[in-house]
Image (tube, rainbow, N blue to C red; front, side):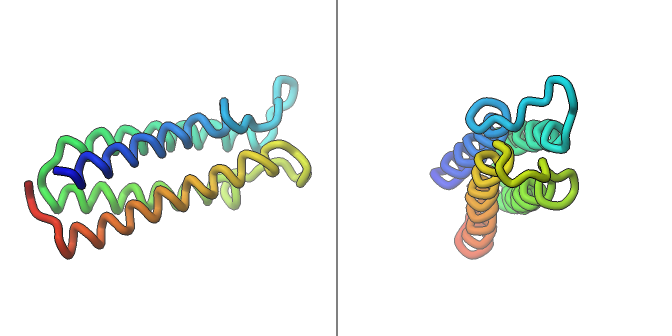
Amino acid sequence: MKNRITIALLFILTGLLITLAPTVLFKVCSTEKMKMACYYTRGAEIGLGILIAALGAVYFFFENKGTRIGISIAQFLNAVLVLVYPLKLIGLCKNSEMDCRVKTLPALIVLAVVLGGTAAANVIYLAKFGKTE
């Protein structure tokens, strides 16, 4: 029960932070006139953050060990996507002094590592010690 609540709260909190990072906490570049790559990355990260938080909420309600392992694997893959969107798929502004490169990217990297580490550790924990509650 403790694992389920703790991990669910960590997933939800990380998802909310990923949603807020490019919008409120570490805003991407102002793109009112011209939509740059960071504008589209922000949209992708918002969607991923909502998905991560929703999977965290779903995780709380499942007692089956296999289902919780599956959700944790999905969260690990979501962490990879959090990194891949700004680094490879969509990208950010080319100028290394822009806000999206200086503030938003490091925040997303830290959040992705936290999410991926939590998910991977949870898969290992559940596989070795987890019980169906």
